[in-house]
Length: 223
Image (tube, rainbow, N blue to C red):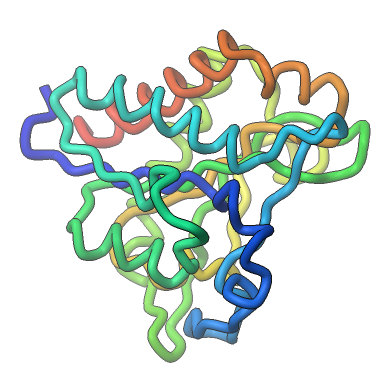
């Protein structure tokens, strides 16, 4: 059991962000540069928003991790009128002293672009950002999540990012730059592709997605 282990789940965006344009467009410092507080996220061509997808998967993942004995905290639970901003999302994980943190998303790329990818922090040491201590453990977390996600969902890694590995390193995301705990983002699929959207809008597939994330995180936490 994962007794004593803390996992922070960050459901990307917020379904109500679109009603708060001025607040989410406010710039926050992410160490390397200033960035918008948050964005509305994307949606399927039929209009189902990414923010509803991320919260649904976060709830499923929380249940699975709690069943394993972990303490789980969400950065938002549909209980805020907008946000939180990307810097606060990172701070919630840091203040919880999370053993692992994951930010859940779905991409809004071009049709024909398919598959998932896991984003890991690159080495950043600038302003308030210093990821040097978390680069290696975050990479391990990312690799374990990607491996379990393929195995459980049967979904192939992205055909448009990551050279077929499903792994991408970035240094421009505030949620990673400002993290002091091992953290990754996962883009579970492309909402703008018809085939991927059929998976993302399926409750049974979202359960598999949560299961894949859970197995990767549990594997990481057990070393």
